[in-house]
Length: 153
Image (tube, rainbow, N blue to C red):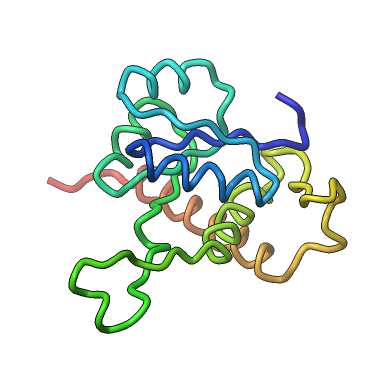
């Protein structure tokens, strides 16, 4: 896996997966869609993928197969208008989605920052990425503290 590309696995139904993969590729990411649990298992066992995108019901499944960051795609869909609540298509917030993917892949564990479509690295990290990294580190420290605490009887 090249250091400048973060490979992303997308575990969704066919049409949704193709839509998400297209958005990731437009954002400069290498992505592959899988649609069955066996395909997901095979892909994650390869250790080529550093990030997963799926829907809420499948997040635990992905995390059980491999401990990688998982993006819940459902939070990036919004009703376009009040009237669209009747079941008409919802609007996808591609900008927020790619911002979230950027934040998850901007950490040092991924080597380099992602490159944009022109093949150049962004000029500077935004304060947002620094804040996200700080929050992730604090959450990790707090989790470790909780795991070390002896349980009282």
